[in-house]
Length: 424
Image (cartoon, rainbow, N blue to C red; front, side, top):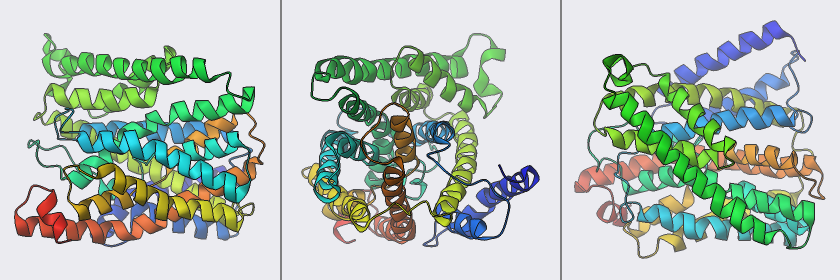
């Protein structure tokens, strides 16, 4: 179990790093998650009495820790989006969700079948686990704090933020399909899957999110009793209350809580779009997100240091790299053809398909519900390697690429789409 006193000290040091590093690394090609990853590797290489990060032995703990981190990040992403919801305004998001997500699942599953010779259920699971982009590790390429202007979000940051906010929930039906395939075999489960896991649970998540957001938004900003009008008291921790309330109630009716949390956040923001309380809520939730991210990535680095990738083969590594370098860029580019972004902005959006904490959650969840005919250690090795590769690749490139995009946008005076993109 490790030395409890040492664990407390290291947890405090990790929290301190989460506060200090974003300022030290600002405008540098080196992200907070990447720094935490390296720190975790170095820490576990020292002769210290630390608990061994073992996601197989501690599957339930990994599931719930990553679940909380993703929930908090989804709330933060929804509160930060300045653009008003609408079919046309969110057209880039629908393109990525409708095309890139399913094509990525099929591409990864196909690669797993061909390169790894995995059974169909395991291949589908890998595709479902690695398909969603991550709202936790993508802060460098997402929208920033809430502001008054609805046009403040450039197309790249808005698309990546809204995509990550929704595809984490939309991956759940695909994970359930893999679980059903592994448990039942054949396709006799398909009818119930479409009706329950796809239609009902997605619909319940959307509806519960809208209702929770409407009720909480009214309570925060327009409650008839001033003591209940929480926006006037500026308590940031209420963002956690909204997160857990929306998630818990949605899961109680068997809806997808991830969808509900993001929709709740967007609906609260829409209740009073220019109110300063949005910034208070977002600021608090962002701090909690950074804290959880630092701790989890430190443990991920420890997982690498103690030999967590021992089960990884070159073929498994190839699947992860094919996803990051071929499947996501290609499907992301094709999905945006004819959209509002220019060609170079399409390339940036397609490239930054960051994988992260959400993938770790889905794998832990699925392994608690079925056997997939592949050793759990091998599944963890492939997924962890893909997350690590994404963390390094995107962590190093995010700041310089987005800074260049911003400079070109400032130079042209454009709001964020094609003119800046043409000269990137």
